[in-house]
Structure formats: structure tokens, C-alpha cells
Length: 84
Image (cartoon, rainbow, N blue to C red):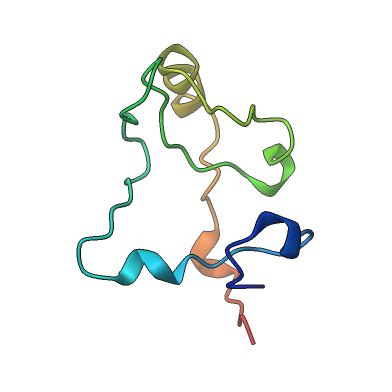
């Protein structure tokens, strides 16, 4: 993992955005509409889908289809990991 904000310095690593813990910082909950053109939806994805999902996100129509399928977070709490 890395906490380095620069994309060029974190290739191949998972970015932990610790800055979002500061007072006044914003983030968006899963399954919420994002405040941008096209109202993209913040959605969890499985590791298998990671490179298949478009960088600009998932639209509302596709989000509705996705929630009818398998939950990408299924088994999340059974797979305990350490980041150290």
C-alpha cells in the first residue's frame, strides 16, 4: 500500500487516502450519486472488475443492473488482511 498522493509514485499499489479523515474533508458513500455530469454512481467493484470499469464511473442505468447481480463485497469481512 501507499499513502503517496501522486499517481506516478503509486503504480501497482493500493492508495490509502488518509487525507479524507481531516475535518471538513469530503467523500461519498457507496451507491451514492456523484455530483458531476451524468450523475455517475459511487459503487464497489470486485478485484476481477477493477480494470473493466470505465475510469469515469458507472451511470445510473448500469448501477441498477449491477445491484441485481452478485454483491462485490460478498465475503469482505471473512478475508481479514493487514496493511503492514
